[in-house]
Image (cartoon, rainbow, N blue to C red):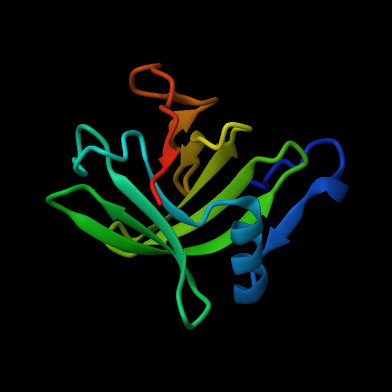
Length: 146
């Protein structure tokens, strides 16, 4: 199970969304909806950069689609919360992996998106403090493609 999300020193700045309507509103107002990539002109590729798409379906579900070129998947966003610092904490269920992952996203004033953390249900991080755990390299900024 995930540890509680940190909302800073005061929970007043937190917005938590678990219902479909409020979840959709949270991600829309925060600015997550749309297509994102490190290089929007490049073809999606597992090694060179995926195209990531966040959308609200007609039934109200918020979906996270990943296009790696040769492979694609579609996953449901199950919760989202904005903390006092503006970090969007998102939980996504990945049916093919049979796991829920939590990640934190930061939207810069220039409009780019960056992953600050990504962890499994067991608390195993692939991204921590804006860096890939395996390499220590910073996560790249993603640009809106639509």
